[in-house]
Amino acid sequence: MRFDIISVLPELLESPLNHSIMQRAKDRGLLEVFLHNLRDYALGKHRQVDDYQFGGGAGMVMRPEPLAACIEKLCAERIYDAIIYTSPDGQTLDQSLCNQLSMKENLLVICGHYKGIDERIRQKYVTLEISIGDYVLSGGELAAAVIVDAVGRLIPGVLNDETSALFDSFQDDLLAPPVYTRPAEWEGMKVPEVLLSGHEKNISEWRHEQSLERTRSRRPDLLERYEKGEDAA
Ligand code: ADE
Image (cartoon, rainbow, N blue to C red; front, side):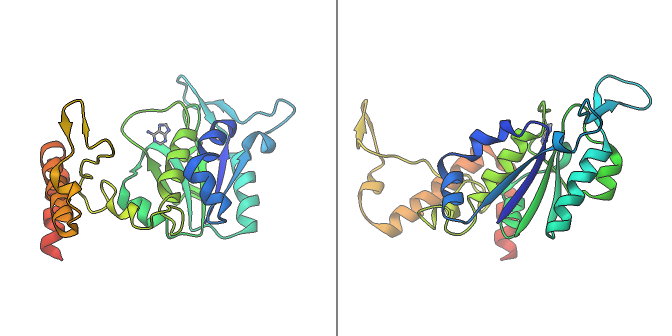
Protein backbone atom coordinates (compact mmCIF):
# COMPACT_ATOMS: atom_id res chain seq x y z
CA MET A 1 0.00 0.00 0.00
CA ARG A 2 1.24 3.45 -0.85
CA PHE A 3 0.51 6.82 0.72
CA ASP A 4 1.54 10.08 -0.96
CA ILE A 5 1.22 13.03 1.40
CA ILE A 6 1.29 16.67 0.32
CA SER A 7 2.30 19.08 3.06
CA VAL A 8 3.96 22.46 3.71
CA LEU A 9 5.61 20.91 6.79
CA PRO A 10 6.68 17.38 5.82
CA GLU A 11 9.20 17.35 8.71
CA LEU A 12 6.23 17.03 11.08
CA LEU A 13 5.45 13.64 9.57
CA GLU A 14 8.91 12.16 9.62
CA SER A 15 9.20 11.02 13.21
CA PRO A 16 5.76 9.42 13.69
CA LEU A 17 6.12 7.43 10.48
CA ASN A 18 9.72 6.30 10.98
CA HIS A 19 9.42 4.25 14.14
CA SER A 20 7.97 1.09 15.57
CA ILE A 21 5.19 -0.60 13.61
CA MET A 22 5.16 1.93 10.76
CA GLN A 23 8.89 1.44 10.20
CA ARG A 24 8.44 -2.33 10.32
CA ALA A 25 5.62 -2.12 7.75
CA LYS A 26 7.94 -0.17 5.46
CA ASP A 27 10.89 -2.53 6.09
CA ARG A 28 8.67 -5.46 5.13
CA GLY A 29 7.71 -3.72 1.89
CA LEU A 30 4.04 -3.63 2.91
CA LEU A 31 3.75 0.13 3.24
CA GLU A 32 5.33 3.00 1.34
CA VAL A 33 4.95 6.63 2.40
CA PHE A 34 6.16 9.46 0.16
CA LEU A 35 6.17 13.02 1.46
CA HIS A 36 5.82 15.88 -1.02
CA ASN A 37 6.78 19.38 0.02
CA LEU A 38 4.21 21.81 -1.36
CA ARG A 39 6.86 24.56 -1.35
CA ASP A 40 8.51 22.77 -4.30
CA TYR A 41 5.40 23.77 -6.29
CA ALA A 42 5.17 27.28 -4.83
CA LEU A 43 4.65 30.49 -6.83
CA GLY A 44 7.23 33.18 -7.59
CA LYS A 45 10.51 33.94 -5.91
CA HIS A 46 8.84 34.12 -2.48
CA ARG A 47 7.73 30.48 -2.78
CA GLN A 48 4.22 31.52 -1.86
CA VAL A 49 1.66 28.82 -1.10
CA ASP A 50 -1.00 30.86 0.72
CA ASP A 51 -2.83 34.16 0.36
CA TYR A 52 -5.47 36.39 1.98
CA GLN A 53 -9.04 35.15 1.81
CA PHE A 54 -11.50 36.88 -0.47
CA GLY A 55 -14.22 38.62 1.51
CA GLY A 56 -11.86 39.42 4.37
CA GLY A 57 -11.36 37.66 7.66
CA ALA A 58 -8.45 36.43 9.70
CA GLY A 59 -6.23 33.66 8.43
CA MET A 60 -4.62 32.73 5.16
CA VAL A 61 -5.91 30.21 2.63
CA MET A 62 -3.78 27.77 0.65
CA ARG A 63 -3.73 28.85 -3.00
CA PRO A 64 -5.03 26.46 -5.62
CA GLU A 65 -2.16 26.60 -8.14
CA PRO A 66 0.66 24.92 -6.14
CA LEU A 67 -1.72 22.25 -4.87
CA ALA A 68 -3.08 21.60 -8.35
CA ALA A 69 0.45 21.36 -9.81
CA CYS A 70 1.47 18.82 -7.18
CA ILE A 71 -1.74 16.77 -7.42
CA GLU A 72 -1.60 16.73 -11.25
CA LYS A 73 2.01 15.55 -11.20
CA LEU A 74 1.21 12.72 -8.79
CA CYS A 75 -1.99 11.73 -10.61
CA ALA A 76 -0.07 11.49 -13.89
CA GLU A 77 2.12 8.80 -12.27
CA ARG A 78 -0.58 6.55 -10.79
CA ILE A 79 -4.29 6.16 -10.18
CA TYR A 80 -5.35 6.95 -6.62
CA ASP A 81 -8.15 5.05 -4.92
CA ALA A 82 -8.94 8.20 -2.98
CA ILE A 83 -7.71 11.77 -2.74
CA ILE A 84 -8.10 12.62 0.91
CA TYR A 85 -8.17 16.06 2.50
CA THR A 86 -7.65 16.24 6.27
CA SER A 87 -10.09 18.73 7.71
CA PRO A 88 -12.22 19.20 10.82
CA ASP A 89 -15.30 19.31 8.61
CA GLY A 90 -14.67 15.89 7.07
CA GLN A 91 -16.12 12.48 7.91
CA THR A 92 -14.94 11.40 11.36
CA LEU A 93 -12.29 8.68 11.16
CA ASP A 94 -13.41 5.44 12.81
CA GLN A 95 -12.36 1.80 12.69
CA SER A 96 -14.77 0.96 9.92
CA LEU A 97 -13.31 3.67 7.66
CA CYS A 98 -9.77 2.50 8.57
CA ASN A 99 -10.70 -1.06 7.60
CA GLN A 100 -12.02 0.14 4.25
CA LEU A 101 -8.93 2.25 3.55
CA SER A 102 -6.57 -0.61 4.49
CA MET A 103 -7.82 -2.49 1.41
CA LYS A 104 -6.75 0.28 -0.99
CA GLU A 105 -3.55 0.38 -3.02
CA ASN A 106 -2.79 4.09 -3.46
CA LEU A 107 -3.98 6.95 -1.29
CA LEU A 108 -3.13 10.61 -1.74
CA VAL A 109 -3.46 12.81 1.36
CA ILE A 110 -3.51 16.61 1.29
CA CYS A 111 -2.69 18.28 4.61
CA GLY A 112 -4.46 21.57 5.16
CA HIS A 113 -2.87 24.57 6.88
CA TYR A 114 -3.84 28.07 7.90
CA LYS A 115 -7.59 28.53 7.23
CA GLY A 116 -7.59 25.56 4.88
CA ILE A 117 -7.31 25.05 1.14
CA ASP A 118 -9.14 26.94 -1.60
CA GLU A 119 -12.60 25.38 -1.99
CA ARG A 120 -12.04 24.78 -5.72
CA ILE A 121 -9.33 22.20 -4.98
CA ARG A 122 -11.84 20.31 -2.87
CA GLN A 123 -14.39 20.46 -5.68
CA LYS A 124 -12.00 19.44 -8.43
CA TYR A 125 -9.82 16.77 -6.84
CA VAL A 126 -10.77 15.68 -3.34
CA THR A 127 -12.83 12.47 -3.09
CA LEU A 128 -12.79 11.96 0.69
CA GLU A 129 -12.52 14.44 3.56
CA ILE A 130 -11.46 13.07 6.93
CA SER A 131 -11.54 14.61 10.40
CA ILE A 132 -9.81 12.85 13.26
CA GLY A 133 -12.13 14.40 15.85
CA ASP A 134 -14.17 17.42 16.84
CA TYR A 135 -11.31 19.78 17.63
CA VAL A 136 -9.08 21.97 15.49
CA LEU A 137 -5.41 21.12 14.93
CA SER A 138 -2.96 23.71 13.71
CA GLY A 139 -2.36 21.69 10.57
CA GLY A 140 -3.36 18.48 8.84
CA GLU A 141 -0.03 16.67 9.33
CA LEU A 142 -0.86 15.08 12.66
CA ALA A 143 -4.20 13.97 11.24
CA ALA A 144 -2.38 12.44 8.25
CA ALA A 145 0.00 10.61 10.62
CA VAL A 146 -2.99 9.24 12.54
CA ILE A 147 -4.58 8.02 9.31
CA VAL A 148 -1.39 6.30 8.07
CA ASP A 149 -0.84 4.65 11.45
CA ALA A 150 -4.42 3.48 12.01
CA VAL A 151 -4.73 2.20 8.42
CA GLY A 152 -1.17 0.91 7.96
CA ARG A 153 -1.27 -1.42 10.97
CA LEU A 154 -4.29 -3.20 9.46
CA ILE A 155 -2.41 -4.30 6.34
CA PRO A 156 -2.00 -8.09 6.61
CA GLY A 157 1.53 -8.96 7.74
CA VAL A 158 2.25 -5.66 9.47
CA LEU A 159 1.39 -6.81 12.99
CA ASN A 160 3.43 -9.73 14.25
CA ASP A 161 0.51 -11.51 15.87
CA GLU A 162 -1.82 -11.67 12.88
CA THR A 163 -4.89 -11.90 15.07
CA SER A 164 -4.15 -9.02 17.38
CA ALA A 165 -5.82 -6.32 15.28
CA LEU A 166 -9.01 -8.40 15.41
CA PHE A 167 -9.20 -7.89 19.17
CA ASP A 168 -8.58 -4.15 19.16
CA SER A 169 -11.11 -1.87 20.74
CA PHE A 170 -13.76 -0.91 18.16
CA GLN A 171 -12.95 -3.77 15.80
CA ASP A 172 -16.40 -5.27 16.45
CA ASP A 173 -17.90 -2.13 18.02
CA LEU A 174 -16.80 -3.23 21.51
CA LEU A 175 -14.02 -1.81 23.66
CA ALA A 176 -11.11 -4.15 24.38
CA PRO A 177 -11.08 -6.09 27.68
CA PRO A 178 -8.49 -5.31 30.42
CA VAL A 179 -5.06 -6.88 29.97
CA TYR A 180 -2.46 -8.04 32.51
CA THR A 181 1.15 -9.18 32.50
CA ARG A 182 3.60 -10.39 35.16
CA PRO A 183 3.74 -10.34 38.13
CA ALA A 184 0.55 -12.27 38.91
CA GLU A 185 0.24 -10.25 42.09
CA TRP A 186 1.32 -6.60 42.40
CA GLU A 187 0.73 -4.23 45.31
CA GLY A 188 -1.84 -6.68 46.67
CA MET A 189 -3.78 -6.70 43.36
CA LYS A 190 -4.20 -10.09 41.74
CA VAL A 191 -4.60 -10.97 38.08
CA PRO A 192 -8.06 -12.55 37.57
CA GLU A 193 -7.79 -16.29 38.23
CA VAL A 194 -9.31 -17.29 34.89
CA LEU A 195 -6.41 -15.73 32.96
CA LEU A 196 -3.97 -18.01 34.78
CA SER A 197 -6.10 -21.12 34.24
CA GLY A 198 -4.95 -21.95 30.71
CA HIS A 199 -8.60 -22.76 29.89
CA GLU A 200 -9.05 -21.14 26.48
CA LYS A 201 -12.85 -21.26 26.32
CA ASN A 202 -13.26 -19.73 29.79
CA ILE A 203 -10.68 -17.06 28.99
CA SER A 204 -12.40 -16.11 25.79
CA GLU A 205 -15.81 -15.97 27.52
CA TRP A 206 -14.34 -13.83 30.33
CA ARG A 207 -12.81 -11.41 27.83
CA HIS A 208 -16.06 -11.09 25.95
CA GLU A 209 -17.97 -10.36 29.17
CA GLN A 210 -15.39 -7.77 30.19
CA SER A 211 -15.61 -6.14 26.76
CA LEU A 212 -19.38 -5.94 27.04
CA GLU A 213 -19.18 -4.53 30.56
CA ARG A 214 -16.55 -1.95 29.65
CA THR A 215 -18.51 -0.86 26.60
CA ARG A 216 -21.76 -0.71 28.60
CA SER A 217 -20.24 1.56 31.25
CA ARG A 218 -18.03 3.76 29.02
CA ARG A 219 -19.57 3.81 25.55
CA PRO A 220 -23.24 2.80 25.62
CA ASP A 221 -23.59 4.29 22.11
CA LEU A 222 -21.23 1.59 20.78
CA LEU A 223 -23.08 -1.16 22.61
CA GLU A 224 -26.29 -0.16 20.86
CA ARG A 225 -24.56 -0.48 17.49
CA TYR A 226 -23.06 -3.82 18.51
CA GLU A 227 -26.44 -5.22 19.57
CA LYS A 228 -28.03 -4.08 16.32
CA GLY A 229 -25.18 -5.71 14.38
CA GLU A 230 -25.72 -9.00 16.25
CA ASP A 231 -29.43 -8.96 15.39
CA ALA A 232 -28.62 -8.37 11.75
CA ALA A 233 -26.10 -11.26 11.64
N1 ADE B 1 -7.00 19.81 10.52
C1 ADE B 1 -7.28 20.60 11.57
N2 ADE B 1 -8.04 19.99 12.47
C2 ADE B 1 -8.26 18.72 11.99
C3 ADE B 1 -8.99 17.61 12.47
N3 ADE B 1 -9.65 17.63 13.62
N4 ADE B 1 -9.00 16.49 11.71
C4 ADE B 1 -8.36 16.46 10.53
N5 ADE B 1 -7.65 17.50 10.04
C5 ADE B 1 -7.61 18.63 10.74
